[in-house]
Length: 316
Image (cartoon, rainbow, N blue to C red; front, side, top):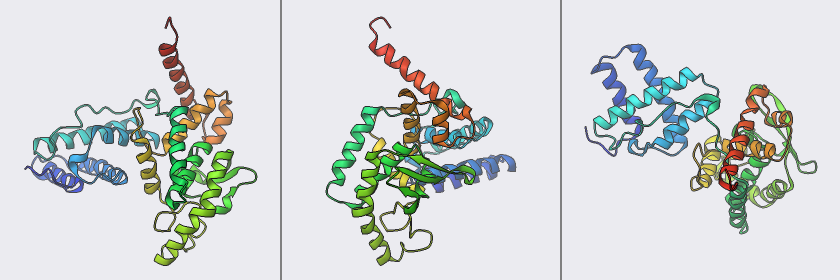
């Protein structure tokens, strides 16, 4: 088989068929392969990866890291790693892939695998670039600037971000109400740069996309009418769209690890601790049920300190 143009979905289907009917693997094994690879398909779609040949080691690492972030057991992540390595090996042997991206893939090692953090200078440059784009009152540019400013300022999850309604934002008190995991509501602060970006979006950007949605019949429903962030078609911005916005911004920045919205949550938490914030205050801001979950960021801060020391101290 030599089909470099095969879609990822078609390749997965062919692999599962081969596993069941050619190699005669057990129904349980095939079922495990199917569950893992269907999840990879959904993740790849979020990253706009449609062709099998575009599956990269970075994509697979991001996929496993995402599973780790969602709290999957280490055994489940190890099984996913095994499933995708079996698929990529088969796809290489059959000519669908020219290079096997799974050869170097290893499952994340839980808390020892530190989250990606963007430096303060990199955040500043990124936000300055977004601000320059938003000067011309392009609605999408105004939205993207407000979105990233709020992600970084409030350290919220992307699922929380897209669920915010306009009345949830208190621009006077500089707070926003979000609905976190388990339906737990919390109120988190943000700064004046985020407020300014939100005001520009609400006054000059959101009405444009809302009007576009009204014309197309996609924007004014009970679910989207009060949404803070709208997509380009005028409906409530979804998790996938928010992910794509952030991934495009982060893809050219140096550093390893996932490049989605969670990077700004990791970054904000780490910068707060670097600045002397109390660990329990950061726990409350992030909405973590356990202090142990927040403590990963103390490891990140320590790792960053060691790196600065090694590069800056004359006798390191």
